[in-house]
Length: 125
Image (cartoon, rainbow, N blue to C red; front, top):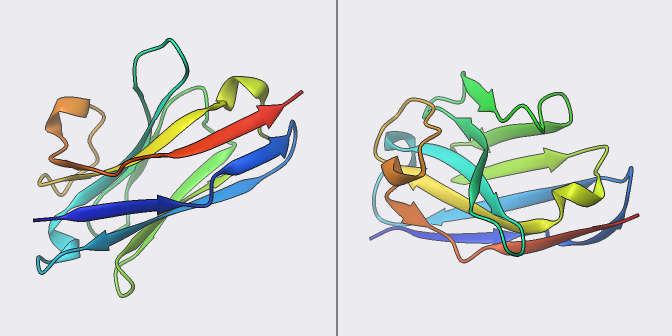
C-alpha cells in the first residue's frame, strides 16, 4: 500500500508564494511512480495542476499555472513538491498529491492509483 501525506498549505496574499510537499510512504519503490498534483476548489470538480515522471526529467502543467508553479521530486527522500509563485485568488483550493503506476507524466485523474487527503491553500485578494 502507498500512503501520501501533503503539507505546506495555508493562507497567503495574492502575489505571494507557497511550497507544498508530499511524502510517499510505502515499502514500494518511489521511482516506479509518476507523481501529480491536482486541486479542487469549492463547488468545482478536481482538476489537474502538474505532473512529473518517475525520473524527474519531464514535467507537465495546466495552462492556468504554467510559468508560476514548479513541480519537482527528490527520489532519495521520496518526496514531491509544488512551488507556487505569483499566487492568485483563483488558485484557492484543496491541493491533492497523487501517485500513478505509470512512470510517465499523466494528466488523467483516473490513471492515478493513490491519493493524499489534501491540503488547503487559500489566496486572499
